[in-house]
Picture 1 (tube, protein in one colour):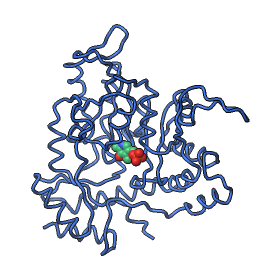
Picture 2 (cartoon, protein in one colour):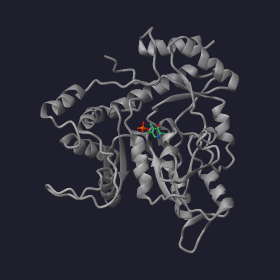
Picture 3 (cartoon, helix red, strand yellow):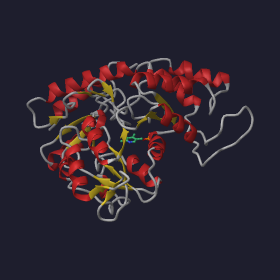
Picture 4 (cartoon, protein in one colour):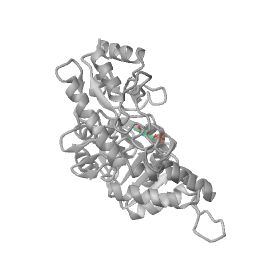
Amino acid sequence: MFDALIQFVRDEYQSDEFIPLHAPVFRGREREYVLETIDSTFVSSVGAFVDRFENQVAQYTGSARAVATVNGTAALHVALRLVGVQPGDLVISQPLTFVATCNAISYLGAEPVFIDVDRATLGLSPRALDNWLEEHAFVDDDGLCRSRADNKIVRACVPMHTFGHPVEIERLVEVCRRWGVALVEDAAESLGSLYRQRHTGTFGAVGTLSFNGNKIITTGGGGMILADGALGARAKHLTTTAKQPHPYEYVHDEVGYNYRLPNLNAALGCAQMEQLEQFVQDKRALASRYEAMLKGGSLQFVREPEGARSNYWLNAVICQDRAERDALLKATNDRGVMTRPIWRLMNQLPAFAHCRHGDLSIAQWLDDRVVNLPSSPTGMQA
Ligand SMILES: *Cc1c(COP(=O)(O)O)cnc(C)c1O
């Protein structure tokens, strides 16, 4: 079973060895830029590559400002602070996400609320969100969205663009605006993905990216906050220990974070950004070959949603049932082709099992069926 698929993957990567889910590709000026930081001694919190990397990402995404951070989780943490999340607040997200989204909510003493995803996008459903708010929330005289049950403020909503496929972000913007809930986009997986020609991560008040080793581009570890000029300036201040600019005095005007991306990592990022569009094209071409190969079989290939351009960060299939999913995972991993199921749903993790949630039947349905396939860029192996 699944012999044809395994052979297809081996042919794509021209390898008889272990094939990972996603490996970084360094075919540009990575070595040159990284050596430049070493030769100059500017490897740490000061150096030109950080500014350059931030400008490259701002330009590529069309964001007014981009602020680099040590990782995507740190970017989310600060993004949520920027929109005013406080202890005791409720923050809506989806059960189908990486744990970082919910960890960041918890760091601020807030509590995630899980709302179901859509089958077509794998991301937060604007209809399910609106329905949940209709049933469980009200807008008070100050325009704050509050839980009917205990008056807690529903401060923010964090949809995630799963595997690079954009959610219905314009509808989510509309629902959040109507309810007075701040929108923060977890675009960690969707650098290079567009919704109606506009880059994911630029629709909400704040967006965040990740450059972890398994993402479409990497800085080793790293992240980015996307925001407008004013929030961007605030993000820079908070992520650099809230230090007031001064030639030699050290004055910090509030509790900040040491979340700045080191210049060494930013150097890698600059070289990776130069190849990003090529990675996206390569991954989109691989996705269409997967789709053609799987056509007519029992595994249903997950396509980009209507009106969106996905970066196809991770290719995915939907199996007929949990038994087929388990058989696919076993057959491929036994033979050195790495595949994996989706993350354990957030509402099932010990840290978040007590959190409130809406009906999660689509997320549960996907949990029984989704498998990710090897997705590294193929056309650029050394
Ligand atoms: C990768 C990722 C993050 C951030 O992860 P870091 O490892 O902290 O950079 C956040 N959310 C999602 C959905 C991710 O996939």
